[in-house]
Image 1 (cartoon, rainbow, N blue to C red):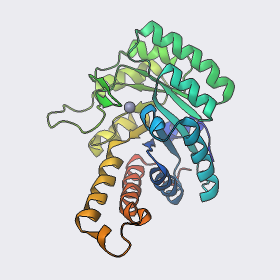
Image 2: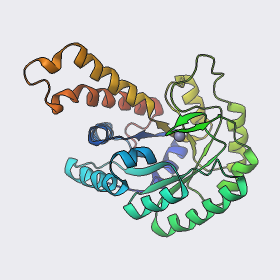
Image 3: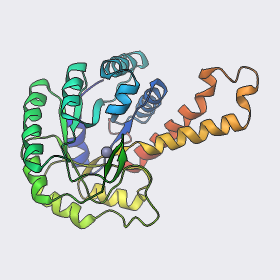
Length: 287
Ligand SMILES: [Zn+2]
């Protein structure tokens, strides 16, 4: 069922595990993530970036597809449909389209403007029963053409935004979108601890979940991270499986060119990645 992320994240915070946000790009992606969540009885968050929303022809298409797919596949675990790194305007579009959760990324605004815009959205999300994620301190790397330097969030600013009544808070702690460089120094747990001290009960969000070593993921969860975003890793798995299929010439055998066959190995690979992440995050059996 489609729900806001509020309750599933409160449970995760209290139970010391994290709910995975897996970004979707098309029907196959969505189907793979939903089927795996149901199989493992795990709550799940489907992430949609503005770019992916545009690619899928618009947020209304995405919301309609996800709602129908939950029904047609008989998905019983809690599913949140979440706008990832939304602009102010994008947030309104997703609220209107029927998303159950949104992220307003105001990290590139001066803190006063980030606070003012977040405050507006808190009011609307409360009225409509949506969960709202805010961001302080930009996440490193590139996402949909926006390049962040990966600065660490200021704990005092985190408190200011958390106090507005958002559901969850993404705070930069040295994490990066995409693949991590060889010389990446790792997550800043000192910063995470300082933020946690300021924001208390607020579930924290770790972006850039691809390639963070397992022990760091587990430590981050123990320090208050209740939502972890995974995007690049599913893309890499999908691409690798698809490449193998084509390089082995399988598309030239029989009816191997049938899109349902051609895309099947990639879809299976996404399932495997999602399964591994849910096991690592500890959300299996928590639906
Ligand atoms: Zn992100």
